[in-house]
Length: 326
Ligand code: SF4
Image 1 (cartoon, protein in one colour):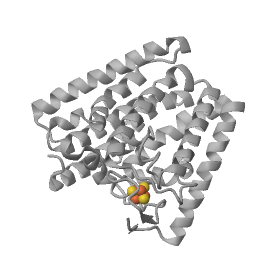
Image 2 (cartoon, rainbow, N blue to C red):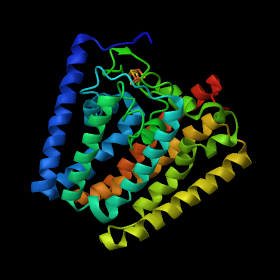
Image 3 (cartoon, rainbow, N blue to C red):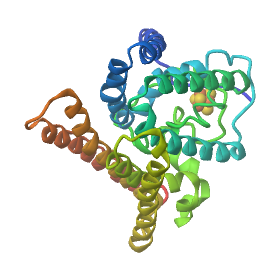
Image 4 (tube, helix red, strand yellow):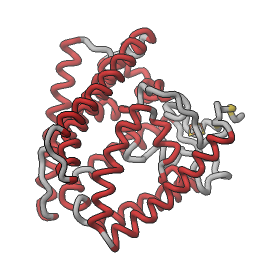
């Protein structure tokens, strides 16, 4: 297969991205060490500073995160001679694995990762080694980032209508390591390509990604209305968040059918809804952890909702003009 030349960053911005990738690796090593030896400050910085910035950065452009993500750096560190591609058949199965990993790992914050630095550090190391190993076998991002990364479904949902055009700093030319749906090639086409022909009818709701998108708003509410508990109560956490996700899926399925929404519009609205719910809850949690009260929570919630409104206002007309999935 001939490599496809890409729109590459300039030498100066390329150097900046490379520096940011190196900083990402050093910061991850520091985080893992911190989680082992000084878990409280490390957990505070991770959950209250770094993670809340990821969704908004995906909305601005998923390429920002994908250009610097330390797991992507590991995934591509040793795969120069790897040629195995992510075929359409493999991508479907890998997408289900990614969603399953997300559904297992996020609720685990409630009984493990929010307070137990050691277990979180071990998971980060294991996932990092997995990304590295899959990069040895698969071409470019075909083994991890575009396949089983648990953040991938969220990158697709929040990154479907970027506010900024950001160059791909990872692939100087495209070897088509992933047959369809690569966010780095075309973020605004990734969702439609992932759904394939199912996007032309309500069948998209029965695909892995479609089910994830419809269940995700409830998943977020379930997570934020549950509490940190002991490890012995892990089952109840999964039941509670799972019930919210299932309720969300059923409600969205009914609404999409009643309102006859096309997949393109429905998925944009679901992205906006999930982002709004995330920041509605996360702002309160983060500011409470920082001891900030008064008008700040409402001001930051308002700013987040305004930005999401701007995102939707620009994205919906573009989607209608394209006629994607409608
Ligand atoms: S990650 Fe995307 S842009 Fe890079 S080689 Fe694979 S398909 Fe091409």
